[in-house]
Image (cartoon, rainbow, N blue to C red; front, side, top):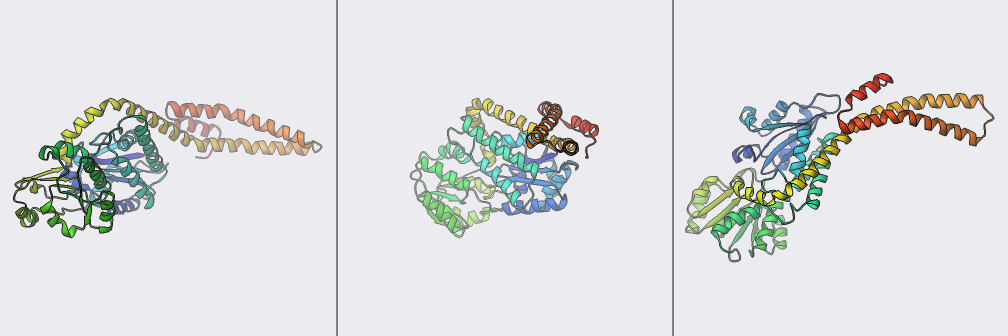
Length: 425
């Protein structure tokens, strides 16, 4: 296998690093397209979320494995960064490690909030984007399809997802609840109209919030969400006016740059609030709000990284389900590599069968020419005898290849069979 993962996540890179490496879908598509130019024939999938940026690269059979240094440089240059500035924050995983990691990510075992539902859709979207720009290939296809299968099994065979949990739910339960005793009388403002915004509105509605305001660049998307949650839609042009009236603000956009600076807050929002408490949850990466706003009177601003302790408490509460989820990952990972190694031997088996079929047909033709008076039933019996003989001759090497695929690498046996039967490379 020739698979590499180079990237960073909330485990070992702070928000400032992830912010600089963040990709919009359009930027990710461009980076994947350029990757094909950097390494023709190579595969690539870019998983970019608020908590991680991970580039999965593979090369076809016969080529050298992808160079981690080249991947790191490509990631950095795609964001117009110096690779030396981001390299200390990147990790590299190879082959089995990369597959194991991808399975854990898709199953939400590596998430900040253990069992959160959004990551599965994000993994699927990352693969679909790579497929659309034709940077995915056989190896990344197999890896990501199996990762999606792992995630579905963990969701259905364990209780990790039994109680709906998400980053917004953890943040509101642990932070907003310390500021507000109730939500049914609070002015709720949600910025963005994607999956995270929908998840936030779902949780807030369950907690009693009413008449939310949804702000989005596209009024049509905001209106669709407003209908679902019985709220009101408006555009970003009205952002500062809505912020002046809000009590609780959750932002989850893909703006790529701050939508509210400290200067704009001080000029247009702060003076209208008279230091009324304002809870702000910034779930975007790059961040939507200038972090300095959190130091203004009455403002309680939290970002993704502020949730670490609360998310660890959530993880502890769900930890008893981890062994069952880990067993699923090990089972699927082992099966993935058995299948991958078996596919490696398939061309040799096909050429071996072809090498025996050619002399079989030649000998049958020679025999039938010598016995022109044979009836059809006799000819069929002789042909079946020849087929059974070839299959019995193929059975031992095929079984050996299957056993070797289950227990280790079949490379040595494949090479031995190729030399023994003079098969082409």
